[in-house]
Image (cartoon, rainbow over all chains, first blue to last red; front, side, top):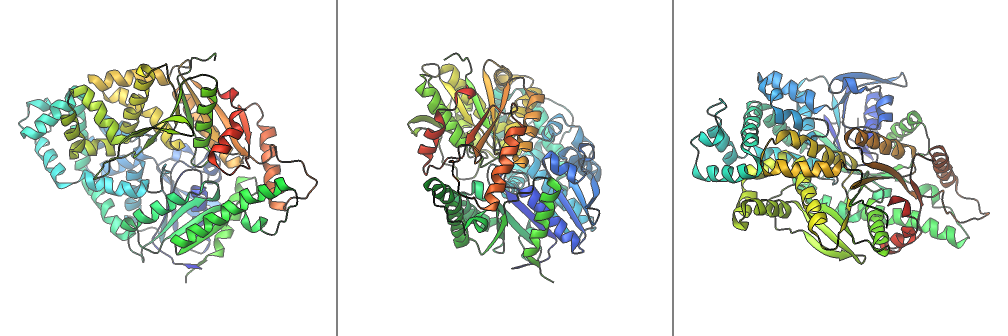
Length: 342
Length: 273
């Protein structure tokens, strides 16, 4: 199987499947083949951070990584805080990073990681420095979290919503919200919400929305990027699953929903496969027969099911090397089973 | 049972067996005479054309609460504004949907509030076993309460958030079990998560190693395939090295059904109480 060279490669998946390691290994493979690569990752395990020499202090900054002294690539550890500062700087809206709500939400676990990683992807693409940007998306409880974040941005800039805030935002002074003349529907809504959240919060939320609107170009460009990501010629999508947690239902769900977001030409990765190593094993002991069943049959059924629903299924073996360096070494060499299209 | 704990949170990366363990532990407590209830979340953002409801049901013979975000949010607002119609209208407005979806930690406030209410007002002193979403998100849950404490300075949510925070910070009320697999990578992830949780709450946090092939493997003179032998040796090394750092290591179960797997581990869960 050959995989085309694209401007973007996006790795999606639930936590714990080895998504970050596979994305990193892929970035190394591309770099070794002479591509100028940026790896954007979020929340990698400490060991991987050490391996890439990414220190927490450098979060949000692009650093140059030399792996095994031979392969060179750039890496960026996402920091929502830095992303929003950069956005604020570009938009000439220093208020953006000063608003209390925006600040709290852009803490590492504030919950806006998906949206910011898309904005970051766009900003880095615009720099024109890279032939391929590999994005390791934040782990979600669900495959689709990242994809859905694209829709969240869209909903946020929904026209009817924009109108309300343009209306509210005409005065930037800190007048009490309720004192402003606003349409009766909005007024009613806000008065009810006020009873629940307190007036202070609503004022600050509206302010947060206004300053985010001030930087809306960055978000809207992020949205425009979505179209590129939908094009076969621009982007490879890698959906990562693992034998340990392979759930057929999830894969079917994914198949159903993914079509709205991504092109047909996507790859399903199954990580931590053991079947090849175990298929020739013929245990005699009945307990061992059960053991083989529980390991091999489950894996086999999972793969067959995935293959029914996905055109391209890529298998990666369970890596038994203990040191993280050897681990990564093994995986990035393994990626060469899937050749780069010239 | 000699425990005051009202909320057990099972967290960890996806696919490590949280759900199995959470259900099994719920069954263990019920067998011991505790009114334990399994709880989890679904639909963590507000999608369009939403008609889903929270479910109060029974799974594996265990009372099960599956909370839906929109349904829970509506219930919360309904209580505050004292009208189901108004609450229904509010949760459908673009403003509210944007608020919830752009501010994802918000959903955890709603879920947590609902769980605490259940503990406080439910019949026969219920104990809740929370099957929490994958690890980054469990931290979002912890941090959300703290963040929102700072965001809201007054109002009903402020008071409720205060109560939630108090519960999540009370070692007599809450316990957290981090579930992980016996590989080095997973172990470090669990430890990273524990470190992050230590910064945020003083409640007891333990690590549970699940699905260990190196434990309870039948004694046999038969040779195992090299890969399997290596995998088991790696696991054994980890279990020996980290002894004392985890509260419990559970064997890989050869059973075929979820129900049977839960029963297999039931007997060894006393340490999680």
